[in-house]
Length: 377
Image (cartoon, rainbow, N blue to C red; front, side, top):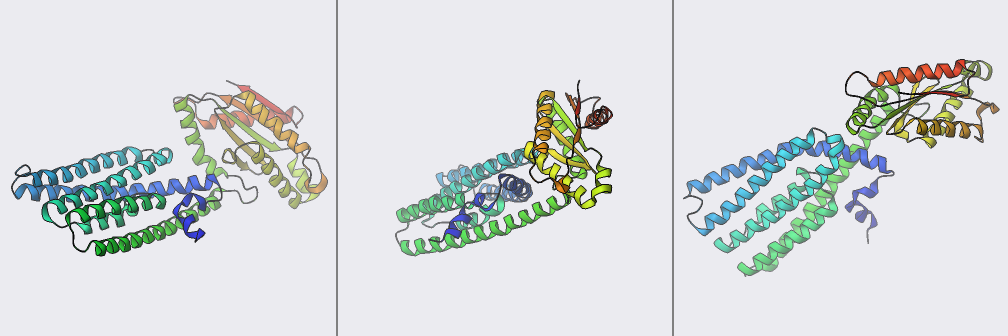
């Protein structure tokens, strides 16, 4: 059995970390949203045309055949309109609702498969033929319309093709085996195109994530840089306001860093920046640590209070003391400013938190360094 092929059926296994997977999913959701906003209105447009054609042929309720087709086209039209409204709503906050978009995409695509089976049954019952081209087309466009995992795509193939073949065998006695072969070939072709499409798409998103990381990460420390802080901090602030959560800001500075560079060289100074950054990443989630500039670092703790902030600082200080391989074989100390407050929609902003933490840090330096000063509003 080809294990690489099986891995492609579940794209979640293609990522090294959960964080990488989440970022790729967000890119995919944004792309799917754009594709959906183009594809769904197209489906709505063609359904309106089909309803108009059936109306001109003698009305919707002139026969049971017309009623059956009216139900088919109306249901697809209403479902597509609802899908488009949901796309608009989700698009207003795709960063946080990307999972919802993924789930709704599966539901919509499943409906499309059920609808195609229904239209096939109507054609077979009233005309002695089947709209195989409709079903095959839908199978091909499923991965393009929205972001559906290939493993779901396989399920769609098996269930959809099985139902269509069952209908054909009831109403159309001739060429049953030929139809089975044709559907199997088209199913395999569609599945291969889906896997190829996903492979190219995920590789593209991975490259995007790598480029974003390169632009947002400080090369020396590996932490997010100040530009990333400027983009993330308003998002963190807004979330704290919405959830009525406290926010604790910690600003850290390496004591006497200029003397380290002057006495031991810039290489040792750079190694200490890497060391402090590594200790911070061990103490706080990587996404919440930033290199603020030079030898200064900043940590944002949404939903955490002053006590939690002090605990983080003490943990960093303890890890710094027992760090096994100290650059230059010298001891280095840190000074911290810790500020906790409740973000509000009016008046305050996150820059005030930065300023307060900065003032507290310099107070710690004036008090003798290798310590922290804290304040709670």
